[in-house]
Image 1 (tube, rainbow, N blue to C red):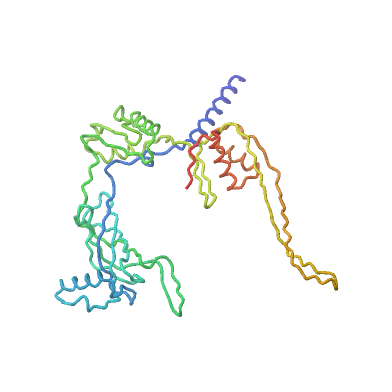
Image 2: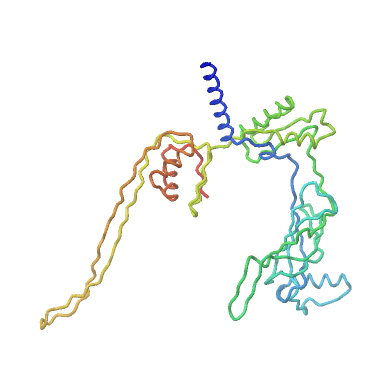
Length: 369
């Protein structure tokens, strides 16, 4: 009976240790750390006009607006001299959009409208039909619709108030896709997975997880790429095969890193940060210099004159330094608790971490942003 209790205790301890290890390593899906190469979005851009503004459009000094308006009117059979036009209700804009993968003709996408001239506000304007082109010069979508800036700008009596940027607006579902982009995800029977954060260990673990599920069909080509051969049984079901791949669980690995934002005093540490045994002293030295004016009066009937003297006092105060030995550890919680125990502020911790890195006691990549 006693032997059985000992065995049960050992099993429970091992289960607890395994659960802790899995929690620390962060089990995740392949879908969250890698993507299928070839699945990507494309940028679109176009030049257009926003009409219907309440006197907040471009001035007559903005030549491109006047020329564009004149050219557009000519297409409707209206001949107008651009030099004689004064259209404060119109603004020249650049229209940008992201064309997602696998969109089809007739789908709608969001567009962003940005003023190019001296327009003060695009709120309430209507974007006129604007072709949106890709880098190859081909038109993939056409945008048109009301512009919403999500802000305001008001002025009067020599003062002004504004919120957000009223010269940039959005038109949700404002562009209609006219043609799709050919997306090739299988090349000679092979799918390529691209890692979001290239890492040798993570790439090897992804390949191992795939081989454990489907057999030896994958290979880690480099830290950022894993190639996968499509099994014959999935030849007519590529979508199902990729879905099964993305659902496989792995333990991604990352280098030990500490991110420091000196402007805000923010410190973010990874779970695999470790330190060697090191002694840390934290204290402060403050120096205060005060200056006082004193008046010196001469004795009566002495014939002297009143003199103003400056007395300077220097006060030096040094706080008692807190010295603590940080033991060698591989737990980021121990590092934080030890630094908090000596009363270090976030600014102090930043300086301490930089000094520990310089001393070679901190085993992590220290990145300051």
